[in-house]
View 1 (cartoon, rainbow, N blue to C red):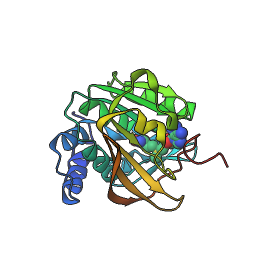
View 2 (view 1 turned 120 degrees about the vertical axis):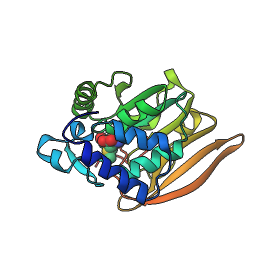
View 3 (view 1 turned 60 degrees about the horizontal axis):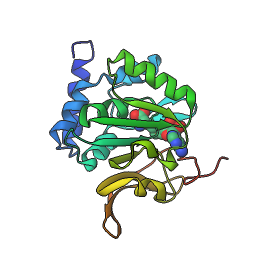
View 4 (view 1 turned 90 degrees about the horizontal axis):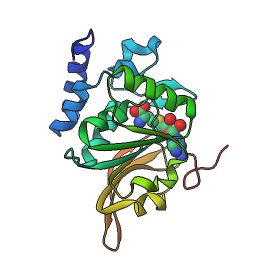
Length: 215
Ligand code: SAM
């Protein structure tokens, strides 16, 4: 990608490597996707900081490191069908489009989904299917998924999402209270699920039938 931001993207890659991201496909995706197209214009000078930034409607684009850690844990080879819950800006959706075959992304706020669609178009990314609904229910028509990423904080593992994973499938989700969560890898096994803690995290709340209630 040739634009005025190549140097900033290279710096962000260095930061992610220094913080332990090793998956080459994930690093390549970060090197490819123009993050400045997914943040509000007044923040484009900060687009490649390793920081969460506001995107309107009280929501945020997550910190690149936490997104890279999520994508690494999904263990994608390029052939998977994946579900994302919490489209937000669409940036992680764009990364997923580089790493999996089929990407479905659900957002509960229509204005954000519309803005994400426009940003994906500006970035020339046409594959992902964007939906507006309660992502805690998953999306049955394309289930089962090889991997699911939830980018909002949940009190526990939403049961419909585990049911919509293939056996051996990976769900990456921040679990905890509203102030502090642990980014958790949940692997669906033959007889239930296995959990692994990945990192401390702080996300906006997952609001829905299997998340937090509306205020
Ligand atoms: N991954 C996004 C990005 O790259 O910009 C950041 C997502 S932001 C931290 C979390 C998003 O989850 C918000 O846009 C919020 O509206 C959305 N959200 C919260 N509860 C949801 C639900 N039940 N279903 C779908 N989206 C939800």
